[in-house]
Image (cartoon, rainbow, N blue to C red):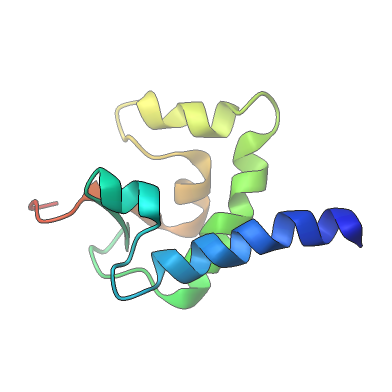
Amino acid sequence: MGDSVEHDIPTIDASRRDFSVRAATFGKRLVGLTVISTAGNRAGPLRVVARNLAKVISAAPCSVGFAMAILPGKRALHDLLTGSRVVHRGRDN
């Protein structure tokens, strides 16, 4: 259970922050980003939790899922799996 707790705490914290009033973790707020659904709406709590849990898949193997964000769609694997995307706040997306 020790390993599970180590991974669950950051996931819960990131999910809470992504779904907060500011809709972003500290790092996302710092650079003006937010997580939304592919429909352009604010990401709901289930989508935010699923997105943060799916980051485990993006990290294996060799973080290929994260590297996918440099491709034309600019979405990481965990965004594709959960119907979300990260955008600059205040821009027409």
